[in-house]
Length: 378
Image (cartoon, rainbow, N blue to C red):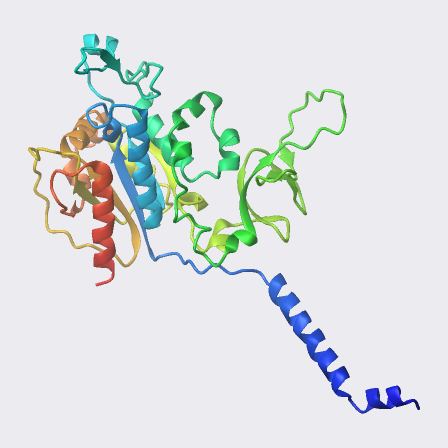
Protein backbone atom coordinates (compact mmCIF):
# COMPACT_ATOMS: atom_id res chain seq x y z
CA UNK A 1 0.00 0.00 0.00
CA UNK A 2 1.39 3.39 -0.98
CA UNK A 3 1.71 6.32 1.36
CA UNK A 4 -1.03 8.24 -0.44
CA UNK A 5 -3.48 5.35 -0.24
CA UNK A 6 -2.72 4.86 3.40
CA UNK A 7 -3.45 8.54 4.10
CA UNK A 8 -6.73 8.27 2.23
CA UNK A 9 -7.83 5.21 4.18
CA UNK A 10 -6.85 6.85 7.45
CA UNK A 11 -9.14 9.83 6.78
CA UNK A 12 -6.59 12.55 6.04
CA UNK A 13 -7.47 16.23 6.68
CA UNK A 14 -7.33 16.94 2.93
CA UNK A 15 -10.00 14.32 2.22
CA UNK A 16 -12.22 15.55 5.06
CA UNK A 17 -11.95 19.11 3.76
CA UNK A 18 -12.89 17.92 0.27
CA UNK A 19 -15.96 16.12 1.64
CA UNK A 20 -17.10 19.19 3.59
CA UNK A 21 -16.70 21.41 0.52
CA UNK A 22 -18.67 18.99 -1.66
CA UNK A 23 -21.43 18.73 0.95
CA UNK A 24 -21.67 22.52 1.25
CA UNK A 25 -21.86 22.90 -2.52
CA UNK A 26 -24.66 20.33 -2.75
CA UNK A 27 -26.55 22.06 0.07
CA UNK A 28 -26.21 25.44 -1.65
CA UNK A 29 -27.36 23.94 -4.94
CA UNK A 30 -30.41 22.36 -3.32
CA UNK A 31 -31.26 25.64 -1.58
CA UNK A 32 -30.96 27.51 -4.87
CA UNK A 33 -33.27 25.07 -6.64
CA UNK A 34 -35.77 25.20 -3.81
CA UNK A 35 -38.93 27.06 -4.76
CA UNK A 36 -39.11 30.60 -3.40
CA UNK A 37 -42.06 31.09 -1.07
CA UNK A 38 -43.93 34.42 -0.93
CA UNK A 39 -44.18 36.18 2.41
CA UNK A 40 -47.38 38.07 1.62
CA UNK A 41 -50.63 36.45 2.77
CA UNK A 42 -54.31 36.91 2.03
CA UNK A 43 -56.32 38.77 4.63
CA UNK A 44 -59.54 37.15 5.93
CA UNK A 45 -61.38 40.31 4.88
CA UNK A 46 -61.38 41.62 1.31
CA UNK A 47 -62.27 45.10 0.12
CA UNK A 48 -64.03 46.36 -2.99
CA UNK A 49 -63.71 50.06 -3.78
CA UNK A 50 -66.52 51.63 -5.82
CA UNK A 51 -65.87 55.09 -7.27
CA UNK A 52 -68.11 57.18 -9.55
CA UNK A 53 -66.95 58.03 -13.05
CA UNK A 54 -67.65 61.68 -12.18
CA UNK A 55 -64.39 61.79 -10.21
CA UNK A 56 -62.76 62.59 -13.57
CA UNK A 57 -65.58 64.79 -14.85
CA UNK A 58 -64.82 68.22 -16.26
CA UNK A 59 -65.62 69.79 -12.91
CA UNK A 60 -62.83 67.72 -11.31
CA UNK A 61 -60.26 67.38 -14.10
CA UNK A 62 -59.41 69.63 -17.02
CA UNK A 63 -57.29 67.41 -19.24
CA UNK A 64 -55.84 63.94 -19.71
CA UNK A 65 -52.87 64.65 -17.46
CA UNK A 66 -55.12 65.45 -14.49
CA UNK A 67 -57.32 62.43 -15.23
CA UNK A 68 -54.23 60.22 -15.27
CA UNK A 69 -53.06 61.45 -11.88
CA UNK A 70 -56.49 60.80 -10.33
CA UNK A 71 -56.42 57.22 -11.65
CA UNK A 72 -52.81 56.78 -10.54
CA UNK A 73 -53.59 57.84 -6.97
CA UNK A 74 -56.54 55.43 -6.87
CA UNK A 75 -54.36 52.59 -8.17
CA UNK A 76 -51.54 53.37 -5.76
CA UNK A 77 -53.88 53.47 -2.75
CA UNK A 78 -55.72 50.27 -3.71
CA UNK A 79 -52.52 48.27 -4.22
CA UNK A 80 -51.12 49.56 -0.93
CA UNK A 81 -54.16 48.23 0.95
CA UNK A 82 -54.58 45.05 -1.14
CA UNK A 83 -57.99 46.01 -2.52
CA UNK A 84 -59.25 43.04 -4.53
CA UNK A 85 -61.73 44.81 -6.79
CA UNK A 86 -62.34 48.32 -8.11
CA UNK A 87 -65.80 49.15 -9.46
CA UNK A 88 -66.31 52.22 -11.63
CA UNK A 89 -69.94 53.29 -11.29
CA UNK A 90 -70.90 54.85 -14.60
CA UNK A 91 -72.67 58.17 -14.02
CA UNK A 92 -72.85 60.03 -17.36
CA UNK A 93 -72.64 63.77 -17.01
CA UNK A 94 -75.94 65.47 -17.75
CA UNK A 95 -75.81 68.24 -20.32
CA UNK A 96 -78.29 70.03 -22.47
CA UNK A 97 -78.02 69.72 -26.23
CA UNK A 98 -76.12 72.96 -26.72
CA UNK A 99 -73.44 72.07 -24.19
CA UNK A 100 -72.94 68.66 -25.79
CA UNK A 101 -72.02 70.39 -29.03
CA UNK A 102 -69.42 72.59 -27.36
CA UNK A 103 -66.00 71.78 -25.95
CA UNK A 104 -65.03 73.11 -22.51
CA UNK A 105 -62.99 76.27 -22.85
CA UNK A 106 -60.80 78.29 -20.53
CA UNK A 107 -59.91 81.86 -21.38
CA UNK A 108 -56.38 82.84 -20.42
CA UNK A 109 -55.22 86.32 -19.47
CA UNK A 110 -54.18 86.90 -23.06
CA UNK A 111 -57.80 86.24 -24.14
CA UNK A 112 -56.63 83.19 -26.07
CA UNK A 113 -59.09 80.31 -25.89
CA UNK A 114 -57.56 77.02 -24.79
CA UNK A 115 -59.46 73.80 -25.36
CA UNK A 116 -59.09 70.89 -22.98
CA UNK A 117 -59.84 67.31 -24.04
CA UNK A 118 -59.05 63.96 -22.47
CA UNK A 119 -56.36 63.24 -25.04
CA UNK A 120 -55.43 66.92 -25.31
CA UNK A 121 -56.02 66.72 -29.07
CA UNK A 122 -59.16 64.83 -29.97
CA UNK A 123 -62.75 65.40 -28.95
CA UNK A 124 -64.31 63.02 -26.45
CA UNK A 125 -68.00 62.24 -26.82
CA UNK A 126 -69.83 61.98 -23.53
CA UNK A 127 -73.33 61.25 -24.75
CA UNK A 128 -74.70 57.72 -24.85
CA UNK A 129 -76.14 56.69 -28.19
CA UNK A 130 -77.36 53.40 -26.76
CA UNK A 131 -79.46 52.72 -23.71
CA UNK A 132 -76.76 50.83 -21.82
CA UNK A 133 -73.66 52.23 -23.51
CA UNK A 134 -70.68 52.89 -21.28
CA UNK A 135 -69.68 56.54 -21.02
CA UNK A 136 -66.23 57.66 -22.12
CA UNK A 137 -65.35 58.79 -18.60
CA UNK A 138 -66.07 55.37 -17.10
CA UNK A 139 -64.17 53.55 -19.84
CA UNK A 140 -61.18 55.89 -19.60
CA UNK A 141 -60.94 55.58 -15.82
CA UNK A 142 -61.27 51.78 -15.90
CA UNK A 143 -58.66 51.50 -18.66
CA UNK A 144 -56.15 53.64 -16.79
CA UNK A 145 -56.67 51.64 -13.60
CA UNK A 146 -55.96 48.45 -15.54
CA UNK A 147 -52.94 50.02 -17.24
CA UNK A 148 -51.14 50.67 -13.97
CA UNK A 149 -51.17 46.99 -12.95
CA UNK A 150 -50.23 45.67 -16.40
CA UNK A 151 -46.51 44.89 -16.94
CA UNK A 152 -44.93 47.26 -19.51
CA UNK A 153 -44.09 44.41 -21.89
CA UNK A 154 -47.75 43.33 -22.07
CA UNK A 155 -49.38 46.72 -22.53
CA UNK A 156 -49.40 46.88 -26.32
CA UNK A 157 -50.87 43.39 -26.53
CA UNK A 158 -53.40 43.97 -23.74
CA UNK A 159 -54.99 47.22 -24.91
CA UNK A 160 -56.60 48.24 -28.17
CA UNK A 161 -54.43 50.34 -30.44
CA UNK A 162 -56.79 53.32 -30.42
CA UNK A 163 -56.64 53.49 -26.60
CA UNK A 164 -52.84 53.75 -26.43
CA UNK A 165 -53.02 57.53 -26.90
CA UNK A 166 -54.70 57.74 -23.48
CA UNK A 167 -51.49 56.49 -21.83
CA UNK A 168 -49.34 59.45 -22.85
CA UNK A 169 -48.86 60.54 -19.23
CA UNK A 170 -49.52 57.20 -17.52
CA UNK A 171 -46.46 55.55 -19.05
CA UNK A 172 -44.21 58.25 -17.58
CA UNK A 173 -45.32 57.70 -13.98
CA UNK A 174 -43.34 55.50 -11.55
CA UNK A 175 -44.20 51.84 -11.19
CA UNK A 176 -46.59 51.07 -8.35
CA UNK A 177 -44.51 50.03 -5.35
CA UNK A 178 -47.01 47.56 -3.87
CA UNK A 179 -47.60 45.18 -6.76
CA UNK A 180 -47.80 41.49 -5.71
CA UNK A 181 -44.24 40.59 -6.73
CA UNK A 182 -42.62 43.55 -4.95
CA UNK A 183 -41.25 43.33 -1.38
CA UNK A 184 -42.23 39.66 -1.46
CA UNK A 185 -39.09 37.55 -0.90
CA UNK A 186 -37.87 38.11 -4.49
CA UNK A 187 -40.56 35.89 -5.99
CA UNK A 188 -39.92 37.63 -9.32
CA UNK A 189 -36.88 35.35 -9.72
CA UNK A 190 -39.18 32.33 -10.02
CA UNK A 191 -42.48 33.71 -11.31
CA UNK A 192 -43.55 36.16 -13.96
CA UNK A 193 -46.71 37.49 -15.57
CA UNK A 194 -47.22 36.62 -19.22
CA UNK A 195 -49.64 36.48 -22.12
CA UNK A 196 -50.16 33.34 -24.18
CA UNK A 197 -49.41 34.00 -27.85
CA UNK A 198 -49.71 32.19 -31.19
CA UNK A 199 -47.15 29.60 -32.23
CA UNK A 200 -44.25 30.76 -34.33
CA UNK A 201 -44.72 30.35 -38.07
CA UNK A 202 -42.30 27.66 -39.24
CA UNK A 203 -43.52 27.81 -42.81
CA UNK A 204 -43.61 30.68 -45.28
CA UNK A 205 -47.03 29.54 -46.42
CA UNK A 206 -49.85 31.62 -45.04
CA UNK A 207 -51.92 29.70 -42.55
CA UNK A 208 -55.53 30.86 -42.58
CA UNK A 209 -56.61 28.57 -39.77
CA UNK A 210 -57.28 30.27 -36.48
CA UNK A 211 -54.91 29.10 -33.78
CA UNK A 212 -56.78 28.75 -30.51
CA UNK A 213 -54.19 26.92 -28.43
CA UNK A 214 -50.48 27.39 -27.88
CA UNK A 215 -47.49 26.50 -25.71
CA UNK A 216 -45.82 29.91 -26.00
CA UNK A 217 -46.00 32.75 -23.48
CA UNK A 218 -44.78 36.32 -23.86
CA UNK A 219 -42.90 37.17 -20.65
CA UNK A 220 -41.05 40.22 -21.92
CA UNK A 221 -37.92 38.39 -23.08
CA UNK A 222 -36.42 38.22 -26.57
CA UNK A 223 -37.79 34.73 -27.01
CA UNK A 224 -41.21 33.50 -25.94
CA UNK A 225 -41.26 30.93 -23.15
CA UNK A 226 -42.28 27.45 -24.31
CA UNK A 227 -44.39 25.69 -21.71
CA UNK A 228 -43.96 22.09 -20.64
CA UNK A 229 -47.11 20.02 -20.86
CA UNK A 230 -50.34 20.51 -22.83
CA UNK A 231 -51.26 23.55 -24.90
CA UNK A 232 -53.32 26.39 -23.42
CA UNK A 233 -55.77 28.91 -24.94
CA UNK A 234 -54.30 31.85 -26.85
CA UNK A 235 -54.38 35.46 -25.61
CA UNK A 236 -54.83 34.64 -21.93
CA UNK A 237 -53.08 36.44 -19.07
CA UNK A 238 -51.17 33.88 -16.99
CA UNK A 239 -48.65 33.54 -14.17
CA UNK A 240 -45.67 31.38 -15.14
CA UNK A 241 -43.23 29.33 -13.09
CA UNK A 242 -39.95 30.10 -14.87
CA UNK A 243 -38.10 27.02 -13.60
CA UNK A 244 -40.82 24.44 -14.17
CA UNK A 245 -42.07 26.25 -17.30
CA UNK A 246 -45.68 25.81 -16.35
CA UNK A 247 -48.69 27.97 -15.53
CA UNK A 248 -49.56 28.31 -11.85
CA UNK A 249 -52.12 30.15 -9.75
CA UNK A 250 -51.17 33.73 -8.82
CA UNK A 251 -51.82 32.96 -5.15
CA UNK A 252 -49.17 30.22 -5.24
CA UNK A 253 -46.70 32.65 -6.76
CA UNK A 254 -47.42 35.80 -4.78
CA UNK A 255 -49.44 34.71 -1.75
CA UNK A 256 -52.13 37.29 -2.57
CA UNK A 257 -54.60 37.74 -5.41
CA UNK A 258 -57.33 40.13 -6.42
CA UNK A 259 -60.91 39.19 -7.24
CA UNK A 260 -61.24 36.50 -9.92
CA UNK A 261 -57.62 35.46 -9.28
CA UNK A 262 -56.41 38.71 -10.84
CA UNK A 263 -52.93 40.19 -10.57
CA UNK A 264 -53.30 43.15 -8.20
CA UNK A 265 -56.97 44.12 -8.37
CA UNK A 266 -59.84 43.33 -10.71
CA UNK A 267 -61.50 46.25 -12.53
CA UNK A 268 -65.12 46.29 -13.67
CA UNK A 269 -67.63 48.92 -14.78
CA UNK A 270 -71.11 49.04 -13.22
CA UNK A 271 -73.63 50.39 -15.73
CA UNK A 272 -76.34 50.74 -13.08
CA UNK A 273 -76.58 51.13 -9.33
CA UNK A 274 -77.96 47.61 -8.87
CA UNK A 275 -75.09 46.05 -10.85
CA UNK A 276 -72.65 47.34 -8.23
CA UNK A 277 -74.16 44.72 -5.92
CA UNK A 278 -75.45 42.01 -8.25
CA UNK A 279 -72.37 41.67 -10.48
CA UNK A 280 -69.87 41.20 -7.69
CA UNK A 281 -66.60 39.52 -8.68
CA UNK A 282 -66.88 37.41 -5.53
CA UNK A 283 -69.09 34.33 -5.80
CA UNK A 284 -70.61 34.91 -2.36
CA UNK A 285 -71.24 38.62 -2.95
CA UNK A 286 -70.62 41.29 -0.34
CA UNK A 287 -71.04 40.81 3.38
CA UNK A 288 -71.34 44.53 4.09
CA UNK A 289 -71.77 47.78 2.14
CA UNK A 290 -70.40 51.04 3.51
CA UNK A 291 -70.87 54.57 2.19
CA UNK A 292 -68.05 57.13 2.41
CA UNK A 293 -68.91 60.70 1.44
CA UNK A 294 -66.33 62.49 -0.72
CA UNK A 295 -66.28 64.63 -3.83
CA UNK A 296 -69.04 66.77 -2.27
CA UNK A 297 -67.21 70.04 -1.78
CA UNK A 298 -70.13 71.93 -0.26
CA UNK A 299 -71.61 68.95 1.60
CA UNK A 300 -75.16 70.08 0.94
CA UNK A 301 -76.67 66.61 0.68
CA UNK A 302 -76.32 65.01 4.08
CA UNK A 303 -77.93 61.61 4.55
CA UNK A 304 -78.36 60.11 7.98
CA UNK A 305 -77.43 56.44 8.35
CA UNK A 306 -77.91 54.14 11.28
CA UNK A 307 -74.91 53.46 13.47
CA UNK A 308 -72.52 51.15 11.69
CA UNK A 309 -71.10 48.04 13.30
CA UNK A 310 -68.00 47.62 11.21
CA UNK A 311 -66.87 44.04 10.59
CA UNK A 312 -63.17 44.23 9.76
CA UNK A 313 -62.31 40.63 10.60
CA UNK A 314 -63.91 38.64 7.77
CA UNK A 315 -66.07 38.84 4.66
CA UNK A 316 -66.14 40.92 1.48
CA UNK A 317 -66.73 44.59 2.28
CA UNK A 318 -68.00 46.97 -0.39
CA UNK A 319 -66.86 50.57 0.09
CA UNK A 320 -68.89 53.07 -1.95
CA UNK A 321 -67.22 56.45 -2.40
CA UNK A 322 -68.65 59.65 -3.89
CA UNK A 323 -71.21 62.35 -3.26
CA UNK A 324 -74.76 61.31 -2.51
CA UNK A 325 -76.32 63.18 -5.45
CA UNK A 326 -74.34 60.97 -7.86
CA UNK A 327 -75.46 57.78 -6.13
CA UNK A 328 -79.05 58.96 -5.94
CA UNK A 329 -78.99 59.90 -9.63
CA UNK A 330 -77.73 56.43 -10.52
CA UNK A 331 -80.44 54.86 -8.35
CA UNK A 332 -83.24 56.96 -9.87
CA UNK A 333 -82.20 55.81 -13.35
CA UNK A 334 -82.28 52.15 -12.28
CA UNK A 335 -85.85 51.15 -13.13
CA UNK A 336 -85.26 47.57 -12.04
CA UNK A 337 -84.65 48.58 -8.42
CA UNK A 338 -87.62 50.92 -8.35
CA UNK A 339 -89.89 48.23 -9.80
CA UNK A 340 -88.93 45.97 -6.89
CA UNK A 341 -90.23 48.48 -4.39
CA UNK A 342 -86.89 49.86 -3.24
CA UNK A 343 -87.44 53.54 -2.52
CA UNK A 344 -83.92 54.82 -1.94
CA UNK A 345 -80.28 53.93 -2.47
CA UNK A 346 -79.97 54.22 1.29
CA UNK A 347 -81.87 50.94 1.70
CA UNK A 348 -79.03 49.07 -0.01
CA UNK A 349 -76.27 50.45 2.21
CA UNK A 350 -75.56 49.21 5.74
CA UNK A 351 -74.07 52.42 7.09
CA UNK A 352 -71.58 55.23 6.69
CA UNK A 353 -67.93 55.61 7.58
CA UNK A 354 -67.36 59.29 8.29
CA UNK A 355 -64.21 61.02 7.10
CA UNK A 356 -63.16 64.65 6.70
CA UNK A 357 -65.75 66.62 4.74
CA UNK A 358 -65.16 68.17 1.33
CA UNK A 359 -62.25 66.02 0.12
CA UNK A 360 -61.82 64.75 -3.42
CA UNK A 361 -62.78 61.16 -4.27
CA UNK A 362 -59.20 59.94 -4.70
CA UNK A 363 -58.30 61.50 -1.34
CA UNK A 364 -61.41 60.01 0.24
CA UNK A 365 -60.36 56.52 -0.87
CA UNK A 366 -56.97 56.96 0.79
CA UNK A 367 -58.45 58.38 4.00
CA UNK A 368 -61.22 55.78 4.15
CA UNK A 369 -58.94 52.76 3.66
CA UNK A 370 -56.45 54.15 6.17
CA UNK A 371 -59.18 54.59 8.76
CA UNK A 372 -60.44 51.05 8.14
CA UNK A 373 -56.92 49.68 8.47
CA UNK A 374 -56.63 51.34 11.88
CA UNK A 375 -60.01 49.94 12.98
CA UNK A 376 -58.94 46.47 11.85
CA UNK A 377 -56.00 46.44 14.26
CA UNK A 378 -58.11 47.39 17.29
